[in-house]
Image (cartoon, rainbow, N blue to C red):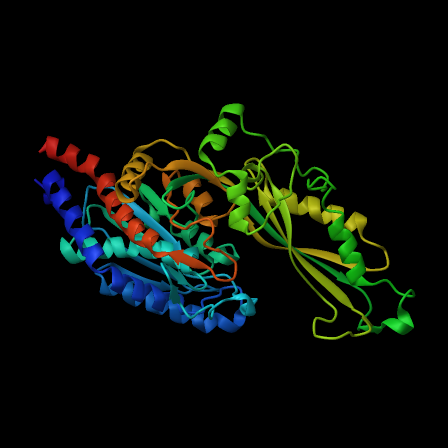
Length: 476
């Protein structure tokens, strides 16, 4: 009989891995701090070398803990890091996904410590990427290490895929996975790149909004013009852009783009009742944002607005003079970036066409206006049932001491849609707190969640394997 089919071996392996993880907590945190110090900002060409160095460091760590076939896959953009351990047939195969790239750190002056300093403040590690997603993916890496260092093997087969471009839509990862689908076939997948419900309130995410990131550019004269000589004579691209942007929302907070809501369906009453019962209260959502009052589409709570309803945010404007003092110019161009968050049935490509037509019709004939699509990812919903979900519920309860609830997230993880299309049962196990500051200054990871996350990952891998082990044992 296969050793892995012995439930007692499984239990001993889990106990050994958990004890190792607890004893190695200080080292795990030190290594995570080293990981966070890499300025692996995928959106900034100037940091391309830092992204590559981070990939090399990560690959070396994976090799050192005993994973096999560790590879750094070159792409036209940033590298993908893969690894595997397949010595547990016929047990299931788990695909572990995470991303090592991070958001830009600006404005750096808003940070209480250097954004890539990885300083520990109280019970949190502060640094860009600490919770999104280096700290969360680190929990799974350290769970794997805890098994391999103690039992010399894992309770199931594991394939790891760590992305260097998630923050820019994972364009090269999605193409690579599609071209190598057989190599990444799995019985289940786990992704940790989302928040929990709150402190000591674990959750599994059941839906993610899609994303459409677009750019609008308005072009005027060939060069900046003297505003005293030409003000009131020629059209101002910045004025026109502001008018176009202001026209994208109604006064009550809805998106004013014609056709935008045509495919949107509100979940049934019982789903909204469940959300109201287990989800964050309005005050909790606003507190996590650091504001006293909110806004948005009438008829929905803040939690609903941020998860089951679509949204449009203007995320940046670049034009004219941005330095101190005044500068009397009419800028030659103005550019804005938009972030759409979309819900099931909405197609990001269709929304991009709607925006393009709307902007073209509303733009003044005195200026040239163009739109460009930057990132596209579809919305996704994950079923609440199945062996992988059941294993995750039990594992999270064992690690956190509380049964997780199912929550919806307004965020986006592009690879999850591909996993669902491949029909791979996917567990979305969030380990960040809502106020960990993902994408914001002073991003941090609450370290007790790192340690509980490692324990949850250990328990999850074992519990996912146990039914297969028991079946093999009965057949022997």
